[in-house]
Image 1 (spheres, rainbow, N blue to C red):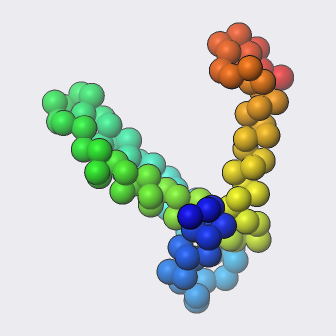
Image 2 (image 1 turned 135 degrees about the vertical axis):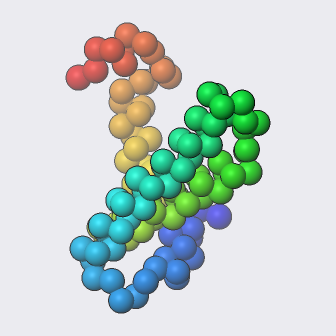
Image 3 (image 1 turned 180 degrees about the vertical axis):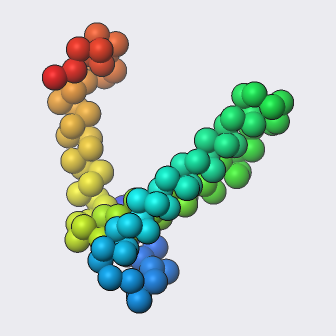
Length: 107
């Protein structure tokens, strides 16, 4: 499955009663909430003695993806374009792969 197909299929579950501003607001709030849930799973693993619940973390990552797709939809752009732009940015920033010096001294 490619990113644009994912976006199309995921957005079948978007609330059709929301206007574009509400969709964007729901997306960024949802991203915050789902990221927090992913963080909580890792926090429990690192600081509370829990086994890392990989399945639960993977499910939260899926929820993060849904909200990213929703945000792209609200902006009227395809998720594939968002991903391509991100890779182009990373390649420009780290042409030879990650480099600590380039990270510290970013333009």
